[in-house]
Image 1 (cartoon, rainbow, N blue to C red):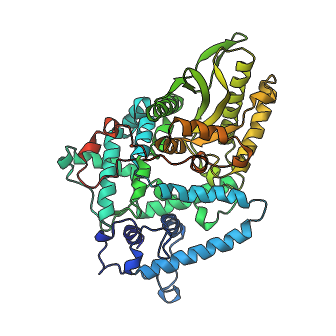
Image 2 (image 1 turned 90 degrees about the horizontal axis):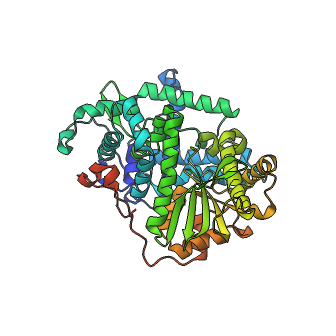
Image 3 (image 1 turned 90 degrees about the vertical axis):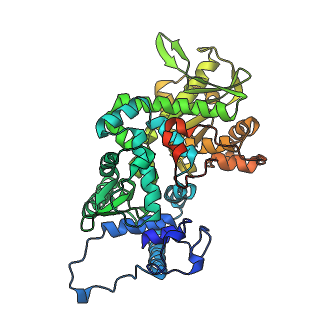
Length: 497
């Protein structure tokens, strides 16, 4: 049922047999404003709730009539019930003291689905950061398969599972010069038996709720499908991906959870590649800029580094970026008090702000000789959207940074404490694809104005500057990191980015 509903609203309705699943023609739409729209985040929530609900041991005559899983109206009723539950639980939880923070949670639940998981710009970024060097070596050593082969097979599964609700184990990879044996390396990483998925999904919920000390609203229960997007039934030895797009999420964003077990050396490698990616993207899309790595210098016989990226125009630094590849946790997305619930992550964000202020202080005091513009922007560049849609979270990060400055560098003065701009790499990539140098720097400048505190940098750019005549083309060669991309036999994502 969930697979079919997602398919007809994901341009895959030709794969849904009407004699098996009935739906009105109007329901086959990708328009999220349609009254027939069943949002994918709602479907993901319903699957999670289904997995977490214990199977009933009641006798048949005491069990409520089951939902008709072969008719669109059945899922429509369930979706409407979920939305009613959401409204009721929101009324109990929210008031004028926390309503704005709810926008942060809603954004995390919806925005990934709205952006999609198959844009080449996103795939390239995650493979660049997590799919090379020490990260790639650790992944292959641990799992017996290269990152390239893992991602390739995940793509084949994504296409296959998008066209078929239930399939036997994937084979026939000789068509793309790969060994079927590799499938046996991939499936344990992305699939689980139905009974095991139920058990692990409930265990994940219990672990998160115990850590937060609250019972989570229905719509914010953690999705185990993001860990294991394929479900197997042993009885028929078949697999289903209820939401096939999550296979791509697991093969890109999800690589982090494979490499994190490698410890500090592996994570340091990923952090360095994140910084390198940012510099490369900036200069590729805006060639009038020069992006330099951190400069080392000495203060009071102690080694010091500038922020990670120094953005120059005509030799002068016009923006500095402190990069944080810290992974956004579930607690940071959906906790009642994200700063407290995900303390270590937000401490990293505060440290980034402090590092930016320290740099401007050192420049002012002549401790490092660099040509820095008086209006140079101070940017915290993150791998994930830590402060999405929340002026409150940003204000609390700045408060923590103020305390760090008072404790560690009291010489920092008010003029050094430039208003930081919080920008995720996804937003920066989108900004670069839709802006020239003037728009980019202009957006950074106006983002510090009081009226834009809490706004996303993309929205500021759209409000302040006219659009380019044409969106820029995705500039990187995905085949360099993912050789199979050019051999795709089916219907690959649009390479325009």
